Length: 233
Image (cartoon, rainbow, N blue to C red; front, top):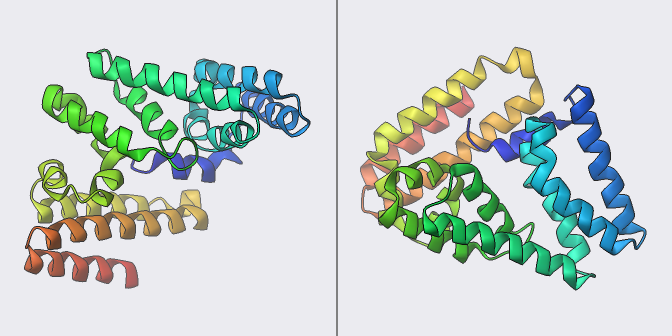
C-alpha cells in the first residue's frame, strides 16, 4: 500500500502489544527529555531509536521516519550536535546506496532525512534516485513510490513517465488499489476512508500532471474524469 508513513500515523493509536508500547514510551520519554533541556541524552536516544526501534517493533516503521524525525529536528534547531548527527547518518546512508550496498528501506531512510520534517534537502534524494536509475534500475523501480512526488515537483516528467509507464495503465492500477481499500472501510473506519480518498486523489493529480506535461492531454482528461466519478459516487 502506498503512503505507508501517512497511514502508519493514523493507525498508531490502535497498535497493541508490549513491544509497541515500549517503543512509544521510549520515544515519548525522549521527547520529554529534549523539552526539559536534557539535550545530549535526548540526542543519544533519538539516534538509538532510529537505529534499533524496528528490531523491537517493525510496526513503528512509519513513526520512525516521520514523527520521531520531526522531534529530532526540533532538538536540532536548538542543539547543533543533533543536526550534525542527522547529517552524518544521512550521508552514510547515501554513500551506501551510491556504492551499491543499498535497499528500499535504506532509501526510505535517506528520503525521510532529506524531507521537510528533517533536513529539507529533497534535491539530494532526487540526485540519488537519478543515480539508481542509471546504475541500479531494479532497485530504482522499488524506490519509485517513495520519490515520486520529489521527481514530479522537480519537473522531471520524462523520468516520471519511465516509472509510470502507460498513463492509463498506471491509472487502472491506482483505481484497483483504491477499490480494494474501499472494501476495507467497514474494518478500518472513517479515518481510513479519508486517507484512501485523499491518497487516491493526490496520486491521480500527480499522474495527470505528468500526462499533461508530456502532451497527453486526452489521456489526462479521461483519467481526471474517471477519478472524479469514483470519488463522487
